[in-house]
View 1 (cartoon, rainbow, N blue to C red):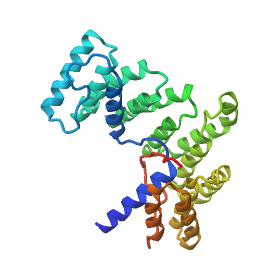
View 2 (cartoon, helix red, strand yellow):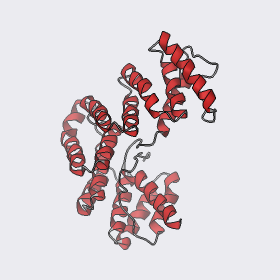
View 3 (cartoon, rainbow, N blue to C red):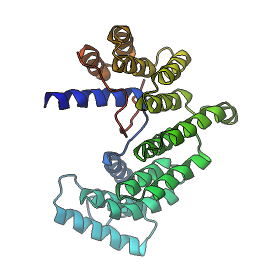
View 4 (cartoon, rainbow, N blue to C red):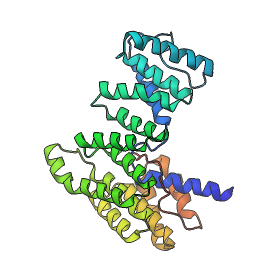
Length: 286
């Protein structure tokens, strides 16, 4: 049990250090659906515009039926689509959440979060090809979209295709200067570097991971993430003394809500793994 708790802490801190947006948890789906339901004013089939997370299955099913009735009359009613999405997820029906997500993605082409969530849902139901294609469709028009990059990289790693993940990220970094010249900030280079370092670390290509983290740290000396990631890699190699000052620096730079986790990881007496396979991936605010 103690080992499991320690492992959880390691995974959480690594997630904070290395990756971007949401991973393959469907919790963000609930948040998007709920916020969307609250922010729209179009007609809904019930007094409540969103399904309560503690609602009974019967209530959720009634809500889903009501939203579906609305959509038969108004197939592009986004309030109903978001309500149906949340109700389906509340029922644990990920497959049933895919049609409203597909519709919302088409109706909101500039809001790529819906497409990312669609890719996640497709992966959950075993449609790996569909999931990968959805991510690639996003990257065709937004090659620097970190959410899609992270999702596709995680999918490739789960498929045991690390070289494909490396190639995707290296290509993104190569084209970043041109992309950012056309549209400033379209590719977040440090975040892409963190993703690349994560892939290297998972493959135990530690020298390459550290080189990427060092380069990322040079670009923004106030960013704690590459410093923390490098500390984790060093500790994984048994170089605890070299890692200590990096953990200290990362804790000093990190937002307050991450400091305790970083310090706890630093004080752990055991070596840590630098990259749990297929880790979900939200990037914290710097």
